[in-house]
Image (cartoon, rainbow, N blue to C red; front, top):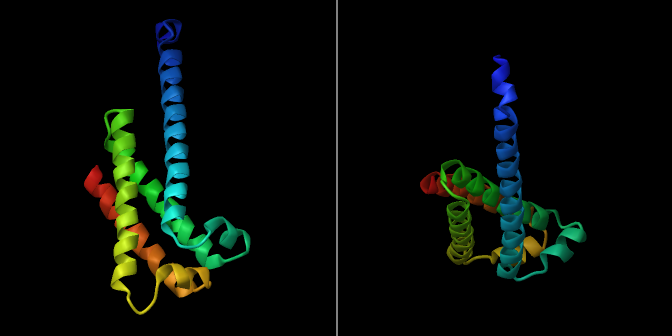
Length: 145
């Protein structure tokens, strides 16, 4: 490459800008995941931390799927957003949609309550809900792009 390219500091300036963008993105995704964990925990009728710490695989699958779904939405939103504010706003909207999906799923399954089944370690319910959450996250993320 041309030496003047490096002499002018173009490479360093671009690299510095890219690193800054990565750091800002990391702060946003970590913040969104922490907020998501808090919101999702409040939505359930059991103590997520206690269940997961106690070895309840169903609770771990369920929380993991919600956070993975949120990551999918944030990834798709970050790809299409033109500002950090847009990314945050659309990520929060995605989080609200995931909460709504959970409430609707719980409502349309009157024969059992999702929270009770997961608190009891029902892996079948956790797997079913995981598929629904991840599928909806992909669709919602595509809508928000």
